[in-house]
Length: 140
Image (cartoon, rainbow, N blue to C red; front, top):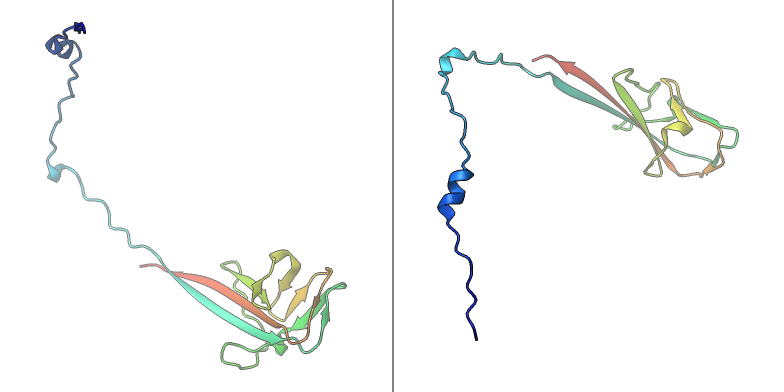
């Protein structure tokens, strides 16, 4: 077998031509830079109210339906006279048989839960839960 002569590289020549020089770094004394102002964040406090109702009869939704707030109970099982709605700093979720419902099929006012007309029935003994969440802030 014949030996293949590989070319010889002189790396020193390449290194000198491709040097990269970093810019000079200048140190700054800390006392020249003012400290940032301490910002105390706002504290957000959620308030959650839940209201429970178990349908006593089938509720046909073809023409819409309204359930008065007085048929619901709170987390402690006490009857309520109205729903606490947090507007504008809050929102309401509706659960039927433990499933969250689309916001476009119902409306909640302090006095009632209203279902818009749709094809469907809520059957007797189905749990209906309204969850009203509100947020307040306290400046620190």
